[in-house]
Image (cartoon, rainbow, N blue to C red; front, side, top):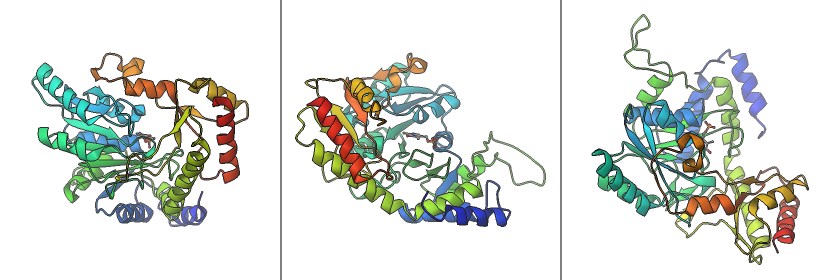
Length: 365
Ligand SMILES: *Cc1c(COP(=O)(O)O)cnc(C)c1O
């Protein structure tokens, strides 16, 4: 928590605006608009809901294929299935760990050959805050006329070529779940390209009720609007967002410095000055020469009460998506085998981060 949450939540409760609309929802959206430099952010109950609405507005329906980065959290892909569509997974490239633009092109060509239809959308993810290679991905997407949904759930504040992640594709999605850069306890947002699509998102998020004196529905709607109480928390969190991002980057700097001389560990870093990750999580890859595997290192650190996690297990390796078409190059499987997410919370002291790095050096030297 940042400081003003209690004050704003109390104010929201006192005002009796505790429903999924109200002054704090509007204010939170304005703050997000201002931060991202856009005009049409819609606050929702979850990042997953934002992915779902983006795909719905893009017309994804029964039998449609949607391309999705394989290396991600299931919430990037599941909404394709909610809408009756089928995911097609694309592997990552080694620089950013995000969608490989060359493989994206291959996948589109292969799907057109197999189904005589274009995939309906492309979902690209900025994993752990690291921007994907958006210039290359947008060029391929534009060549085929396929809209891009940017899953920036982990990447609020990250920039690519000076542009904020979440504002580059047709739609962007943000998450304010408890584990993300800032939280509303649970919540998300859809970054829309224009007022018409923002209106559509708002309409669908509030049960798709037509403007009549009785309840009348021409579309299937959802109950996805953010509550005013959650938005009050979000408004307080927005006050500290720049500090939070600066702190995550400072934590990453400490890891880089202390692990620099370790030949068996690579800290994931911006591949060039085009990329400016928020470093939501600092992550490492262990080389084959490391005396311990990533999972063994996780166990050893756990003995010191230090929690680390393996990287996201790619979607094409999930039982639920075993039958989905997947265009692979081995990168995401290698990342899953050798990668680890390190403690990155802004509440950790420099001292604590140094201790984690020192233990990693001891176990992997
Ligand atoms: C957290 C997350 C989501 C989903 O956001 P929720 O707010 O938890 O629904 C989607 N995609 C990615 C990559 C995430 O990390």
